[in-house]
Length: 402
Image (cartoon, rainbow, N blue to C red; front, side):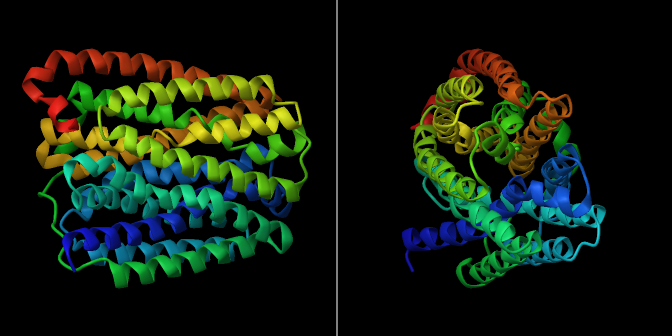
């Protein structure tokens, strides 16, 4: 098998597993109303299924990256999918909400370490000028999850029972496990040894610290709205539960279309591409607020939001890898893990802010919270651009984009 074909199979296997994991991360968005009825909890408490999951990734990704740094990559991937399945089994048979959250934490830990090593494998099996596209292909599993996995899981929950939604996730996990066993080659290269001191090495570099903050704020800006999207579509825009499943499919299609575009844009000058993506997301959030109580125009705003929601992911992940290779070459896996954590800091912050808005009967104003996060993120990108321009002759970052 030649290198090109081998790379294709590796990326395919990673995308399949990412599909299973992505379906798990966001499925609770569609079944929160069902969980509130079963366990007698509030909508805000139901939102913990999103924020607790993200918190598990925040702490799990860097810690597990350190612990598993010298583990065989294929065996690690297989172990990740097994723990993923165990976590969803626990959630499936949870007798109370606390046990369900425990299952979510287990799957979150699997999620964090998977995305850490999968993004690095994807970037390393292609030529440097295609790394953004390769990361986008791997993350396509997440976007396809929003197209198919989350809506199907939501439909199953609404038609049968929310526990059947988690059984659906277990089946996806088994498929991911098998794909890892069959498609991922043995003896993938191991990263350099690292230690907890590597975290300080990364955080004391201004560019790396700034991009971590940008990741948290820019990616998280969608989540004050997205965490409660099902409720918005139903209560504010007047769409039925059956229609919401179809809407979520088209939302996911919008996400998938631009994820590929975002990856291609990020191949060259990812920072400038990210700036454009953030501005587009800000416009989408403004339109969302203006139409949040309207039926058809609100639907168009939701689809517009989908076009920009995850577009920035490949560029954010690629850029921190590029910077880590220049500033902390021995800590690239750890930098990748910290950025995965930063994504989920954004989810936690965004969903928590949205939860506070919901608790104060301000669901309609959740888009403004996302816009506020974006404004800070854009300001930080401005600082990064100045630093990049100032250090370009030394780091030759322009050439690394070509």
